[in-house]
Length: 114
Image (cartoon, rainbow, N blue to C red):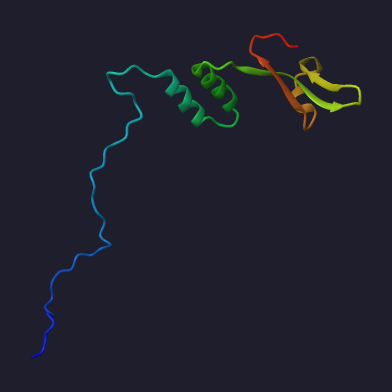
């Protein structure tokens, strides 16, 4: 007795065929019954900011998070053996970029410099 193999043609499922799943659409706008979220708006602004807009966008995000906003008031650039040398806004409008490699000194916005 011989075993015969069924060689009749039948449709085989292609394992490479993609499975279709239901997809929900994502929306960027707030749900109508919810008010606009200022934190979400500040975060979105920071994510989409250009390099020039980024400092202002991050400050807006810090304010929404309740963090103190710090701003640079001086830059220390060298140690002369007796103490640090500083440059600040009294040195001209380009004081932040005048000394390469200078370390900026920050104080809370509206706070007095030391």
